[in-house]
Amino acid sequence: MAPGRSFDAEAVEEALRGLPSIELKGLFRRSSNYTFLAELCDEAGGSPPLLAVYKPAEGESPLWDFPTGGLYRREVAAYEVAKQLGWPRVPPTVVREEAPHGIGAMQMYVVAQPERHYLAAAGEPAHVWIEVALFDVLTNNADRKSGHCLTDGDGLVWVIDHGLTFHVDPKLRTVIWDFAGQPLPPRLRPDLERLADCLSPGGPAAGRLGELLSRRELSVLRRRLHAMLQPGWELPHPTSAWSVPWPPV
Image (cartoon, rainbow, N blue to C red; front, side):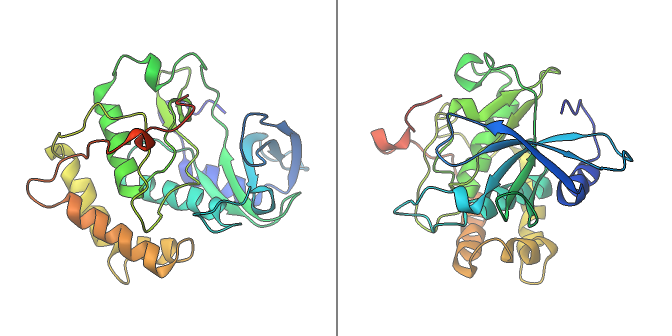
């Protein structure tokens, strides 16, 4: 799908959850977990087909540090956090229960220009990349590769592949270290403060994320967010060679 500069995210979410016919078009061969390109449609022809990326729980490879069978929930949780913040652009992502290989994440497919990714962008647009960097700190992203940053035909940047997020231990691994040592941009503080309100016990985001993350993961997420809002906070520096994922693209 090429959503353009404005689209109805809630309508896309509804389609991802509810379009009854799912045809698997093939596998993404370079993915470490089973990841399918799927076409969703209404058999009655009442709505146009929608291309999506389907990541079933049963296709997840076991990891020593993340619970097996739950990466798809982290994909959805990352989308929910980005939606609350208003940045960065994460394609609409939902839990799909009725699907060919069982429950998993269903995400809107973005038609991207493969040659345009973070390491090929020369740091521009900087205002977008610092949003991605902040988002990765907040979600504790353990796998921000350059190829997870997509540019569509309108030049808009979308970020994908958030299965390795929200761990309770520090796990940040990213290729985006250009902003290390920089403070939180003042323009983004209101968004983080709004998220903090939404994540407070009883808040709307707390309820949704509580269905996707463990109680401890949600608590540590709140802690990271609180730390980012403190005076003098700065984006972290890499601590070792482990701080950069491999391969970087």
